[in-house]
Amino acid sequence: MASLLRLYNTLSRAKEPLRPIDSGRVRMYACGPTVYDAAHIGNARPLIVFDLLFRLLRHLYGEDAVTYARNVTDVDDKINARAAERGITIRALTDETLGQFHADIRRLGILMPDDVNRPGRPPAMIEPRATDHIVEMTALIDRLLAAGHAYVAEEHVLFDVPAMPDYGALSRRPLDEMEAGARVDVAPYKRSPLDFVLWKPSKPGEPSWPSPAGIAAPGRPGWHIECSAMAWKHLGETFDIHAGGIDLVFPHHENELAQSRCCFGTPVMANIWLHNGFLQVEGEKMSKSLGNFVTLREVLADWPGEVVRLAMLRTHYRQPIDWTLRGLEEASRTLDRWYEAAGDAAPGPAPETVLEPLLDDLNTPAALGEVHRLDDPAALRAGAGLLGLLRQTKTERDRAAVAASGVDAAAVEQLIAERKEARARKDWAESDRLREALTALGVTVKDNKDGTTSWTVGP
Image (cartoon, rainbow, N blue to C red):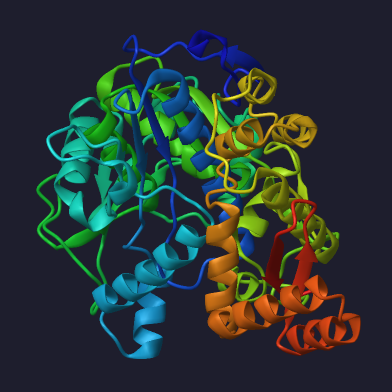
């Protein structure tokens, strides 16, 4: 079954079967957040998509056979500027922002290292921070210099793009088009307008480390080298899947690929390059100037994380997604129906009808359609579970809703018991009064066919 998984490879522009480099072991890397500010709703999309892929790979190959690295960028011009603006240290800013990020994405059902890593076993998931991998970055830079793919100029180290004949294979941009764009702001020390920074001198107040290449002044890495270094450290010179947003194809992923291939002399960095599409808000590109810039935390203040996850998965990951209030409302109603139908049933075997579309390039709309068709509670819970949904039983969900609402559960149960007694003696007026009292508490009552009464908070 594992060999049937097909993914769209941006490098080849075609769906390809996943054939792990190491038989029975899958290694995957995804570009994670730059921790200088709250994540926006667009940042949630790749997190959810690649979490789904991680879950699917673990289902197909086994929990000990998949290694997933999702990096954290904690050295960056935006980070430096924000820390200075707030008058705090860079480490304080990145630690605070990363903590908020973790709290938010846990609510989306994103698996974290402490969810999947087990004592005494190699880690299944790593979240490497860029600043913990400076040694690896400088080692790669020295290797690129030795191989003739980089040069030193005015205390900078730059990648020599013309020295790589097939540069641009991932984005498929003509070199003359890329050069025309690069000429807008060309540093005088560059040999070619396309050359990009591997290392640069640090300005006063910026983080700095000992420089490679014998440069005396301390400096800091360029953006692209960090992912090559972290992927090398945790996944090896080549690996199976590299994932990220479509906006990273050029220049970030193009430059990563160039660095890693030229450093190690390999034909590929990753066999499959996976990219998710853009997100719009109510039909428009998200922009602070348009007033539709929405942070993930703002969305989660109004909607459960599971609703946000389902709303994302209703659109195929490679297609643009239109983030709308209507989509959230529909996702919320769908989850309510599924929780009611699944009840407290334990999940059964994963339904093949749901698994099959996921094997076809993560076709989540088709998979969700199959989940809708499941009428067995155990199968429904298992099918939704493949997508990271229905993570609670209905009872657990109801109790969580009660706890969040502040409703006194004991008082509600007492009113329901009194109402049941009133109905038994056919005192309909008292039964209606008690229902109205429950409604006043924000509680909705449902009389079930088996004679029991269930209740939920809200309409």
